[in-house]
Amino acid sequence: MKLFTVGPVACFPEVLEAMGMQMMSHRSKDYLKIHFETVEQLQGFIETKNPVFLFSSTGTGFMEASVLNCVKEKMIVCVNGSFGKRFAEVARANGREVKVIETKLGEPVQPEIIEKALEEMPDAEAVAITHNETSVGLINDLPKLTEVCSKHDKMVFVDAVSSMGGTELKADEWGIDICFSSSQKCFGVPPGIGIGSVSQRALDVSSTMKNKGWYFDLKVWEKNHTEGKGTPMTTIISQVAGMNVALKMIEEKGGKQWYFDLFKHRNLKIRKGIEKLGLSTYPRKGYESPTVSCISAPEGMSGPDVYNAVRKNGFELAQGYGALKETTFRIGNMGWIPDEYIDEMLETLGKVVS
Image (cartoon, rainbow, N blue to C red):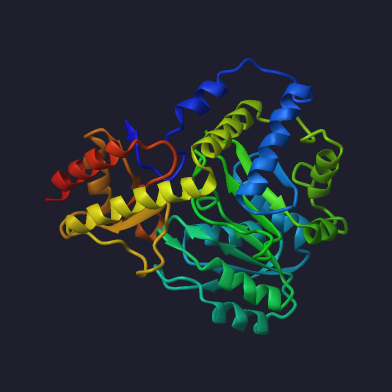
């Protein structure tokens, strides 16, 4: 099956080979070398001097950690799809009061909406933003949104699960306190690593927080990080080894800009291909995701109809998500996708929708 999913995605062969290594102690010099190399590579990828922690979880673990460590009572959550809603659900499940900013599906969050919400809830401690909303195939204009938060001196949490590695992120310059992702998306590594950069402000707030648990306590992670131990507990050694190899491979081929350009090439090729088939992407023009295309199903077919028919011909796309499940389908361009697979997939899709 040739994967055009939105995660987990097809893994690079080099990654799978590296992950076949024999186990080692997570406290050994051999592992710690891999661990801290990977941390340094990721810091460069998202342009931060802040520590990067590698949780044994998916990105949702970091989502919960941001709430537990940095919000005592109130926060604002931007929602323009299902994963923004998840952030709000996680915050409420942990007893926080949440003010939701929700746009019409397919519409981006605009700075003035955050400005208004901050005026209505001036005592909010943080603003959560989903950078790239995979459920609708939309990317928000993150620098403009974080600028408003910085003006009001609010902490910023960014769900970059499907954008980190696929498009530019400047965590420090854009004033992001916690910027998190997962290994199984743009980096083409199996699930298991929750990747997150954490600012000094977030760590300072965490130091005064009560009832935050232990596993996701950022101060526990900081202590182990600064002492050179890597992680507080046994970690996902194989995935970290795979991530290390993926990042080195990217560097050897031309660095992160080369990788961003590769994503742009794939994404544009897919979007031009679907336009030729008379199909259209769902979100507002100009805000299309660089890592996943959400496509409106053609007249007379549902999203699941398209997905299932394409799958029978050897290509795994992604079904529509949440409220759009019946009316859309999605095509991811993350991970290992040889260029010829895109041509073959579009040819198959053309036969299905004709």
